[in-house]
Image 1: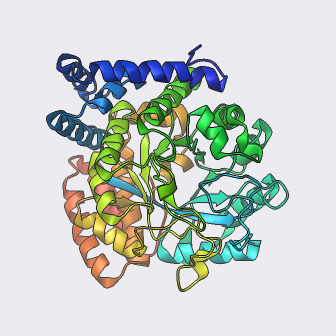
Image 2: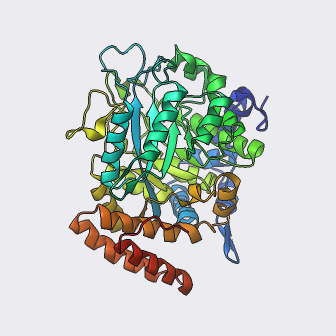
Length: 479
C-alpha cells in the first residue's frame, strides 16, 4: 500500500503506485489540456520580493515525461530554464570527489569496486595521504569536497571516515582550505549518522542506484547493500541522526528511466512529507564503463535527448533542490544541462584512490570513466564564457542555513540575496590565488559586469569592499 508518510521503503516507494503512475502517464501523454495545465501550475509566481513554485507530483511529472511532442518538449525545456533562473540564477557551485578507499564487501555488478573483482588494485589512503590529496585539491582552488569510500566494516569503519573528515578540515595550505565536506558512503545506523553530524559534514549523499526492488536485489547479489529496505530508508535514519541536508540520486541505465523518475520523485515527496525538508540535492549519473564493467551490458541506457528531458523535469518537479551533474558527462552534455536546471558540477575530478597526487590520471583504480577531463581552471573559464558564475561558496552550511532554514529561503527565491554575493566573493578568491593569467583577465571583467547588475547600492558597495580586501590578502568573507 502506498503511503508517502510511511517509514517503510516498500510503502513510500511503492511498486504498484509506480506502475499505476506509469499507466496514468501513458493514457494521458497526449492530453494537451492536462499538459498545459501542469506546465502552468509549475510556472514560477512572483509575489513582492518572493518567488514561489508549486512543483509537480510524481504522477504529474510522469505525464510530461511520457509526452513525445517536440513542441511540448520545448515548453518543458523553456520552463526548466525559467525555474532555474528564478531560484539559482546563473550561479554554478563547484566541487570535487575525493576517493578514500576502494575496499568493498558488496557485489554490485555495475561497479568495479565489487568484492569479486580481483584485477583492480585495492587501496586505502593513510592520513598523510589524505593530507597530500587535500593539498593537491586546494592548490587547484577547490573549497568543497564529496568524500567517497567503498563499504567495508574492517577497512573503512566509521572511525576511519571520521578521522579523514577531521584531517581534511585541518589542512590549511597557503590560502587553501576545504570549507565543506559532503559524505557519500554506504547506508549506516542512526548512531553513525549522529557521529557524521558531529563531525560537521555538509550533505549526506547516497544514490539509490535503482528504485525497482527486484532489479535492485539482482544488481546487488551479495553484501550488506543487498538489503533494499535498509538502503532505501537510509535518509530517514540520517535525518533522525540530525543530518538535515541529504542528497538523492539514481544511476540511470540500470532500470527503465520512467520507473526510476517516478521513484526518485516519490522519495523526494516522502522526505518532504515526513521531515518537512526535501532533498538538498539530486544527482543524475548515467552508467559508464569501468574496470571490468561494460555499460553496454545494461540495456536501459538513455540517449542525450532523453537525459536532458529528465533533468529538465526534475528541475520543474522539485524546483528548490540542487541538481548535480558530474564529470561522467562530456563538456557538450554538461553545457546543455546547465541551461535546463543543473546548479552544481564537479571539476577536474579523479575517481581513483590517491589520484590527485599523480601527475598522470590513474585509470587502474577509477570507479568510472571520466568524460570531462579538463583542469579546474579550464572549467571555471568555460563557465564564465557561458555567462555562468562559478561559485565555491559554502556560506549557508557554515552560517547554519541548512535543512528547513535553507529550504525556506530557497523555496521563495530569497536565497539569491546570499548566493550571488558569495559566488562573486569566492570566484574572486579563485582568481587571485589559483587562476591562470587568461582566466584571471576574463574573470576580473566578468565580476565587474556581474557587480554592476546588483541594484541594491549598499550590497553592491559591500561586495566591492570585500573584493578589494581579497586583493589585499584577506579571505573568507560571506553573506
